[in-house]
Length: 338
Image 1: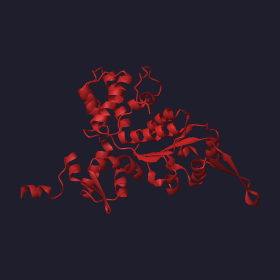
Image 2: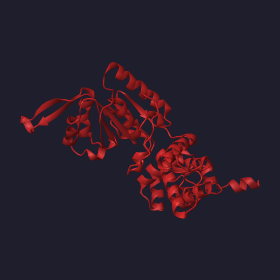
Image 3: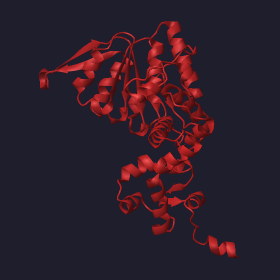
Image 4: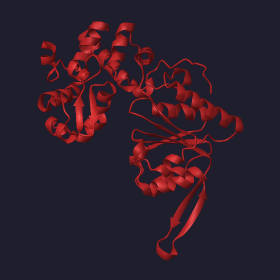
């Protein structure tokens, strides 16, 4: 796997997300263990002149799963065909995609956990034996035709690995890799690169401030950087630490990356339910928010930074959570007086 850095284009395409996506391994920051494992996998396959085995990437949104798939595709040298689980509605859709692959191509399926079980079963022989089984006709006259597929590599990404069936997970013989959250220094380095690509002049302290509030996620960090740039441009202020803090305050992003809904969850559990335990359904009703939004969007970060606990009886706010919203835990005042 080549690690030779290349000059990144100065021209920013219409899609800023595409512009900020690393095109070289040297520009992909973080996830060192996964990069080393993929380097060994791809280098060994290239040495044997074999197609690399199938790979499954999972983890929270915005950590770089799609970017890793693009980098692997460039290293393999084949074209990358991208689709997603919800886009493959019928067996015929998947059959059409597979039969149009060329030798050495990479098929990337995002949100693979949203494939239905019938379509999954078509993938099994395609991944394992490189063949596609098609049933022609119905009833007693139905027959199976087997088509041989060119060698290809399937790279799949998911945020909900538990929703994949065990037979499908077991067929990712190249490895299953979980992407980790980033540390502040890694996020700051990503932001330095993004600022250079976008032509933004910003100092190190401002980048670190954005990094601290990015929820340890590169996608969120780049979003905050772009919004700070916009705020500075519209307000006519220089893009410095003071301006960054103003922009983030306007976005209601606090010192550790919590937004208003995150803080509302903590406040409601403390003020209405005595700090918990309280069920997810009750929290959702109190907030007039969907249960899935709280569980999948807000709760993971609150758990990660230790502001809430998830218990068999429901959610509770930790001592750190009480401190963050400036509230006293019941009984703590009496204990202080004693």
